[in-house]
Length: 148
Image (cartoon, rainbow, N blue to C red; front, side, top):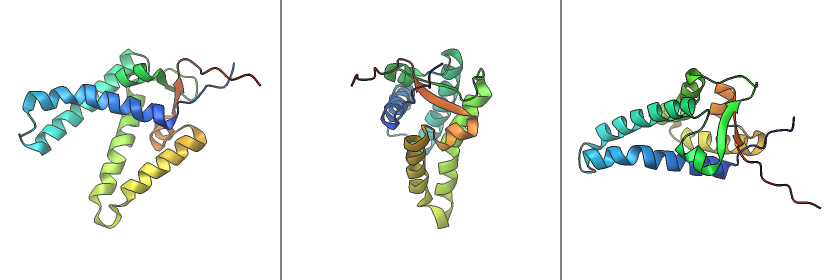
C-alpha cells in the first residue's frame, strides 16, 4: 500500500474556513450581528464544535469544507475513528489556544501555537491536534505525480 498524501496546510485552512462560514453564519444571521457578541460567539462556537464532530462521524472523517477540498481525517494507526477521536481533536485545536490567550504572561503564545502547528504540518503533515487524537489529514484523490 502506498504512503498517503497528506493534505497541505492551505487545503486544511480553506476547509476550516468553509466549515466555519457555512456552520456559524446562520447563527449570526438568526441572532443578528448587533446582539450580545459574546453570547452569539459562544453559541456559534458550540454549534461549530458539535457540527464538526457529527459531520466527521457521519461522513467518515469529512465535513463540508473537507469534502469541498477533497481531504479527510483518518487514523494514523489504520483504525476506525469514533466521535471521541474527533472531539479530542477539536478540543485540542480550539481549547489549547483559548487557554493560552487567557494567561496574561503568555498571551502571545497563541501566535507560537499557530506557528508551531503550521511548522508541524509542513514537516510531518500533522498538527498538535492531530498528534493528540492520533489522526492524519489526507487527500481523498491523490494528486498525480508529474513524469520526469
